[in-house]
Picture 1: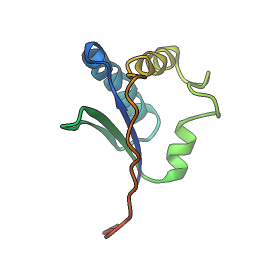
Picture 2: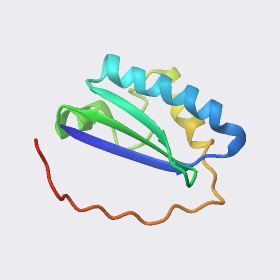
Picture 3: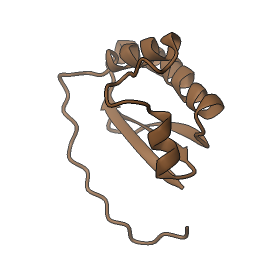
Picture 4: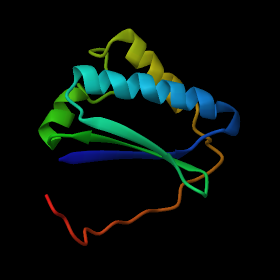
Length: 107
């Protein structure tokens, strides 16, 4: 399995819109691009964390066509949702660095 993690502070007034757009985007990649699923979290510190789960990196890479986001290979609805979800982020709040070390892996 391969996971991609996205994290951001979201403007308080945009939280409901962020959740709505996340569902549109996540469901598309699950139904049409091979993702196993996606999960959305909000930490106590107010950081929103979403991750998508894929069978492998190759499937994920093929699901996100092109180097530019959002790619014109994606349906217009999904391209627009990706653009709109980026506008939900709070540019005034910088994310702290996060380092992770694999301690154990049962794959």
